[in-house]
Length: 260
Image (cartoon, helix red, strand yellow):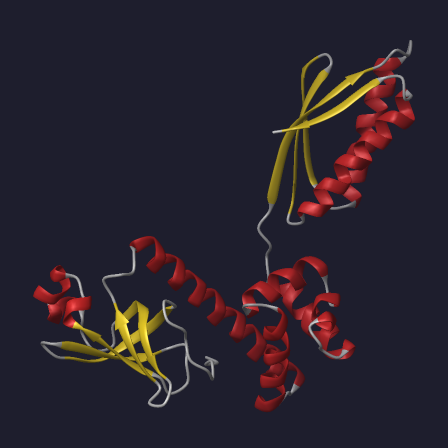
């Protein structure tokens, strides 16, 4: 996996692998950084783990630690294990696993396009100038396409090839918006027009690849659930819904969208 060239900052959370455990200290290698090691003094380890050091702190065990001090000359850190909460630990491990997967996708791209390690490093560095992580960049690319990567400084041809791979490999989590349409028509054929409007609305959702479910509650209320990986697409769809109802029912009709 790609490793960062710099150093973490004080109070950062880092992933470590135990190199050696002694009665007074645990020495670790930082997984995310190139040639950086650290030490956890026994006072910064929970008592339970200290008492059963051979169980909890064996060489090869991965830990999430908090950076207490940084020695940039020696590339050596003083770390704390006990100052990391369980929620922080889980969140950091999840972030690390996601970034591993994101780097693996870039490696796949390199093999498919016969890019050198130097080329991949340049691509990665360009992307990380704009995004905090590759994982974040891939999510934005999966949602919005090659333009995201072009804005990050990649050449259009490379951006197009990489975006194509990302969009094939990344499944975006869907966002669901629930709400109620309140529709009242003064037209003599108002019910027919309302049905026609909903039919047009369903076709619009299908064209935009949105999941739409509409349930009749009681006049004039209709419950809806619209889902998509793209929140903006949902917002635009709901604006379009008002336009459709106004066009079919007239502006004198009551048309309201309430989101929950």
